[in-house]
Image 1: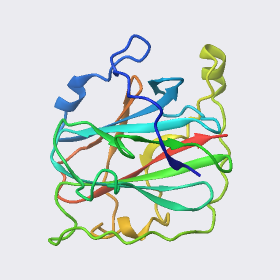
Image 2 (image 1 turned 120 degrees about the vertical axis):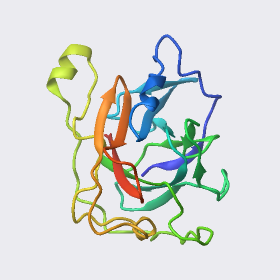
Image 3 (image 1 turned 30 degrees about the vertical axis):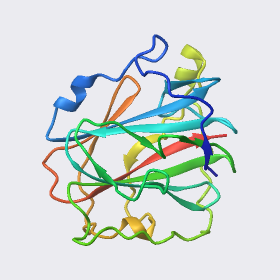
Image 4 (image 1 turned 180 degrees about the horizontal axis):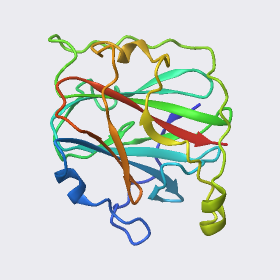
Length: 230
């Protein structure tokens, strides 16, 4: 299970030599686009990693998120143990979940990180993004279920081509993707969603995951990010 843990250091700049910065021009392309970057703490430095990199027990990771439009963000994790945890907004960051175009946000929070633990498999991080509030009233957050039947185990597998060429264990099934039809999602995130999933396009620019809509968003969209770990 991923647990919130205090980070040990201040974040390093994304533009370091070891971790090339995501291309800023990505955000100028398309009507509604979102960027997700996964970082791992390497000793005292945060480094951008491949979205599909298979993580190890004890690794500390976090997301960087931004859009090219104003809106609202809700993020929730389902651990490999079946527990749910709301990641954004959090008490540390305040209850306001408004996001502004081109501004970078850290998930779970500015001074926190995920600590990888629990059974091997895939953590499922749900991202709900909407250009407007789900309701006219201020958002109210009900605690998710304390426990849930653990999801079916999907043991991470290495892509042999990548493993041989650069020595990294990368699982091609990890990273951002559409929520499979019929998958049970946290009830907190289903409010305001339509019956049919909206079409989203997923692409990669170096280690930056780009999610875009072929048409302007008129309502909420949801997708998931699978974190593979041993």
